[in-house]
Length: 393
Image (cartoon, rainbow, N blue to C red):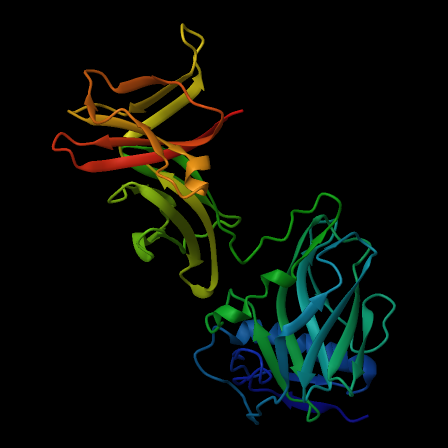
């Protein structure tokens, strides 16, 4: 069969209607090959190899044709049967395309001698590489790839995806090492960990997990953790004041600072939400939200049976400090409340003490109760309060 001169200009390629746009690099490739089943794969490999060389050229040299490949792929449709395999295993890749006669996934890897190799999925039956089957009814390719038996233990890196249309014209989706990549075309999620000791495929989308380091009169200290490490990560902290029904920003987006030191304006119940995103791709954002109860003055409270003379209950409240506070404890009888009667059955009144704790002994009747602990500033203004339920049955 006559040899055919291939001269390919890799141009911009649009994904299917539901997918994002990727870009193909402008490259001129000259290769002579038979266009039969076996040599078609060889010519595809030559085109991919030449693309790397032409990437750094300032101009196209020796081009006799400038053709735009019309093959497109829906990146969102790509699935791998597994991201982990051993030498000799088979992995199935499925994806949806349009105007694609042949297609290949290219991976970089090393053999057990340490030599760097490029693995190309096969368009036709190949005992060493696998095969590819196209379902015209669904527009879906099913490719099988056989991991070489001499593959070393490592993570295989997906180098690019190559599409060949019915006119033998090429288009590519390039990986993130090249300059014209779009964030949505990050190919790392289709890497493959090969070998029992292979490193796991690094995740590309962050998760958000945070913890409360401390809550006291100085405020809230919280930290956030995520599953990826990237210099482009940013963090933000939001809060929701439940009583006021208002959202606010505790700390706006900050690069590489996962810590929060925040002092709410007042005591109360809040939702605290930590967020993390990749500044290089805002679609990669994660968040976590938890409820917190913040007290600017109350450090602790106590209710327990009193074993001294007369019995009853020993009830107390402690503050972080005492710059002239006044303390008060009130008892609500739940039975009286249910009967529609005046339920406040006991109060200490506002009391000033010399230290940071205040105690009382109360003799309850049989029933269910709530204790309301309150702290006022030196001028008698309420600054903090908290409730605690107990029963005497």
